[in-house]
Length: 519
Image (tube, rainbow, N blue to C red; front, side):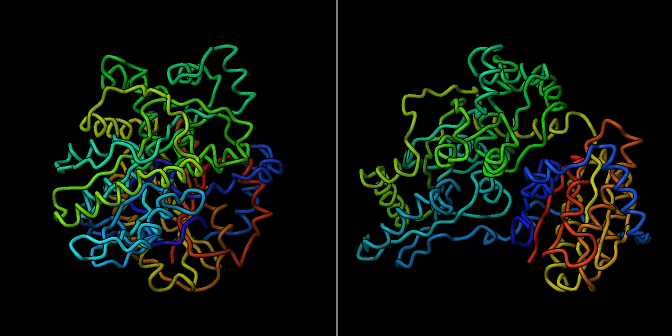
């Protein structure tokens, strides 16, 4: 599984926007061994007949409460502290993942360790910093909806700071640039050659033109979490209507584009992994990530949109003493030694690049996110099946977390979509047939989830096949719908069909499958 945590909310709040999960059919091996679509459908039905899932009537839940935004957010400690300070004055920094993760994406972690080791003082008190690894967009979500209050915020670009201002925060800019970086478009070399031969230089508007013409498949990331996604998405809106990126005309063109675009990835790290396997030929990417991924040597990078220069902010709720500590650390980050390390980590490239502004302010970026949420499915309904692990190892906290997150997230699924529920232990159970997610279906879904209990083995791939069969059958009624399967589990399969047996079927069907890990 991909992540070991309770559940990545707000990932679940963005359910149908391509979550953090791993596509079961994402490897080259799966694709090489994949059956044809027709053969995959035939084999699927043979397998499902052998599995013989049991139908269970979901009870009606009449006690569904509408949650507030804070109640559905995972604990902030879901996002790890990468460096823990121990000074008498210790300030917490919410830092973008490209500089707070594992090497080579660990520039701020290294700088923080150096800073902490120097035992600097303010008014006779030792000063240190703690670094929390969290995406730029998730910081805004947790500050506006979850009450999170970091001492410093170091996002990838200034759009997030402007959004906080629009939300009413008194943002104090300590530096407009900690580290230089850009975001842009990444194309596989042969794809780039074909593209430029027909369309000329690579620009956002020409990429959109090629995508709408069917000459290019372009993948981008979630603008609620990914700085690159927000950057390029707003550049797309600007390309649709330079005079008013939020106009009805831009919205209509976006809707047409979304009908052709692939599912949106949660972060650029997901796209980087897929590109390194040769699966995606054109996508958004940050330059530092491109620079540090040798597997992408056969790709061409072209900067676009606004710069990603990692501004750093503090806030008026931070005490004067802690603000002074914040300024001390910001100055340390800007020292020649710290910047030299940034160069080594792949930052400060393309310093000559002049950004292409989308013309949006903080409120405009927020409106753009809302516009994306309304149009992300291209006007097509989603058919989704949730596959819940109820094996013995899920007993207790994992299953309780699964129930809580599914019930809470169900309040954010649009009524125009279609949802079903499958559970599994050693056997597979259809707890709720797929139906339009109106209030009645939502109540049955909630009742089905709350009635789950744990025990037995883990027949994961049997349940995946049953869920896929349900999706295909419903698609016959709604041929234009998008299909998605979500697998919620705490571990590996130990009963039923093996992955090697199932993978050719999944590869042939090409239905996105996302996994969310518990415990």
